[in-house]
Length: 417
Image 1: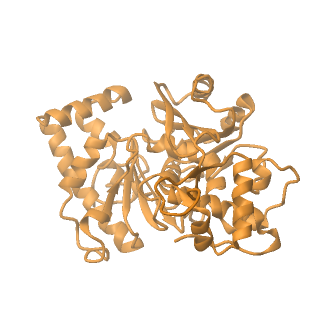
Image 2: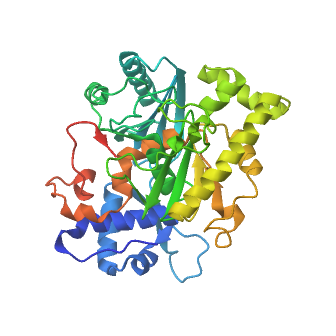
Image 3: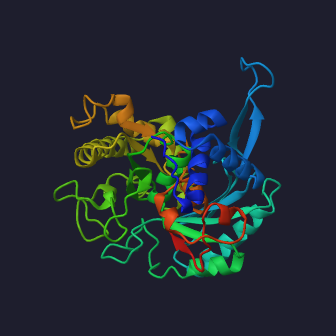
């Protein structure tokens, strides 16, 4: 579904976002095709594309091979050099960072193993990674900001910041305001599953979907429901925390205080316990090596049980939410996710069975293992590239820079998405 423009007097930023979103989703599109899709006048679309070109967000290219008299028609596409965004993914024991351009390409990637219990050590490491990435030849002059993805829940609850799949002790996120002050860049943060789901919406396998469920398979297990291309937050911002749904009666004790939680069977932490490893670099390397050899009884047994829990989880999600598909991403090795999805077949009967083809009920992220970095980097530009009607309610800025033209407002502290 393509959003439609509006003729309200205050709608200029919204219409610019609508046109920019259409160009992003189509990849390359002519002005006439834009007019047909967004229900704006040819003159309005011409004015908007001229403005977007002037501020460098899009570029125009001649369509070669087009059958038309005179000059070949012009098509517009996002300008990958219109600016970069920095994505920071924080997981227990690991920081991943990436420099991402406006079309979702990860230009540079860095990863360090670290004790994430100490916020001061983490802050120093993140600042060092950002400085290193900003010095890279691929770094554009314009930086949209920094996005930080963290394991949830982030709102203080009985199960927040508890256990080895969370950032234990991080009950105060003021350190992100310090990151903003030290780098002098806008900082946005979100639960890792929400960030990665938005990344899939803009640049991944879900870019053509308005509604889907995203399953984030990493050290822990999270999820996000995307409705009309926006993440459903819930009453306090903790919606679809699927890792702590009791799935096995009388099962393994969970860090949250319950037992049999899905995350205790379907997560890298669960697998690490089964294999007797704990450090993140050793864990991932060992998992991939064991999968390739396919001769470890402990790994085989864990995969069989995890696949059954995945099969159950898919059925529950489908029957409760009826999503167009379930996208699986996260930091787990792609080879592992592929193995579990194959073992989970055939899927349980559900409201999606017979409606969606088996190959569509589950889609694997094309950015597996980089989902969190891309998702984090999307946070500073999501507001720019995702048209939402709330833009009409925002105050207009007098300056004619990108933020002003697109209806963005500066934030005085780290902002949660």
